[in-house]
Amino acid sequence: MENEGKLRQDIDRGEKAQALLRNEILIETFDFLEKQYHDAWENSSVDQAEAREKVFMMLQNLHTVKQHIESVVMTGKLANDRLTN
Image 1 (tube, rainbow, N blue to C red):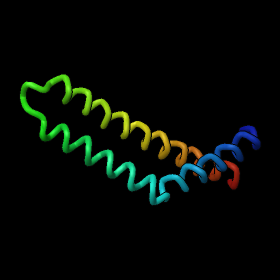
Image 2 (cartoon, rainbow, N blue to C red; image 1 turned 180 degrees about the vertical axis):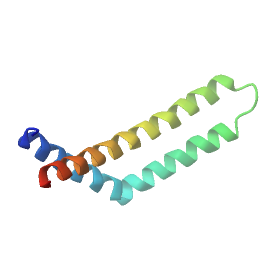
Image 3 (cartoon, helix red, strand yellow; image 1 turned 90 degrees about the vertical axis):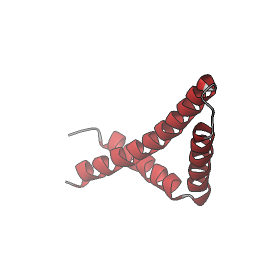
């Protein structure tokens, strides 16, 4: 069996990450930034390829941050399942 202390740590981190994903300000921030980045990309002209690429990278980074938080939540849920079964 895995280290119980590590499982409990993963569960705690998962719960904290889940709280972040429910936090109104963080939700608003992700939504706001995603819209800003998408609008900037969509409204760029053909000759602004470099700017578009930067905005695209910023959007990808935003998604990566959210995916990491979601991954911590999932790890916590899996740890909980291992600990309780």
